[in-house]
Image (cartoon, rainbow, N blue to C red):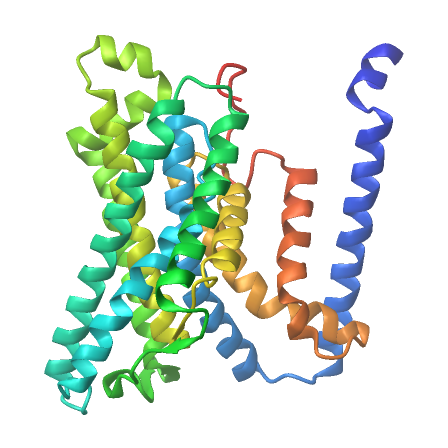
Length: 356
């Protein structure tokens, strides 16, 4: 019995749990102090929550690219954040062309047409780059030890970033203002910024579309089969290479769409813009359960809401000045907590030894 307990609760495990409980105690104490102070009104908490949902939708769309590739190849595509950057960066020049043609002059119909073209163009660029990465950088290393594709993915990330920097400069470029998305809509008696409504609705529609694609179509079922066992799937007549290309295609398209939604919210593009959202999306995928499509979506929304709410909710009560500047650190603290108390993620399952 003593040996079994010692094996289950090692010194490292106990220290990890103590760290996790200490962090959790700080979070609870800060939350209680903030709420008891009455500094923020209910409308402000609601506004922060809606902003978190918009951010979470973007993180979820990017996280799906990570989780789809991991589910098929058991590798982390660290260049995915730069696929997210490439689409809206290339589409910036299309947006400028539309702006010069007065498509963003206040006519809602023209603005919708322009945004549709921009979205499609960004998705095409991100998709093409994702497929090229798979074909050139990853396919030759498919049977290599796992560390080699990981290093290759990091190298591909730097290649994309500095290629865009060399071609288009390191300055920040601003998207044209879309008059149609300015102001607020009243929804169920709540005034919500139009851009947030559009981002949340678009993200949810794309997430539902992907879930339907994976669960209901032949290609989606083939993706699930390849995820379970590539060799057995090949024996059943599934073209594994084709399914892997489709996986990168879907992930790239979602990343490009997420990039456009992101620049509609923040209206700026730069060659390095994919680093932090990509890192947070990877965090979201791990939070939800890496390899789990639904988990990636839940993890994205969870992380977005936590990033928007928790700095004010937790740190303000602890007397920390400018708590919102620590939102990135707080997001990764949440990751530590989840990995300590539930290492497989929010909805993840314990992987078999062959897949782990």
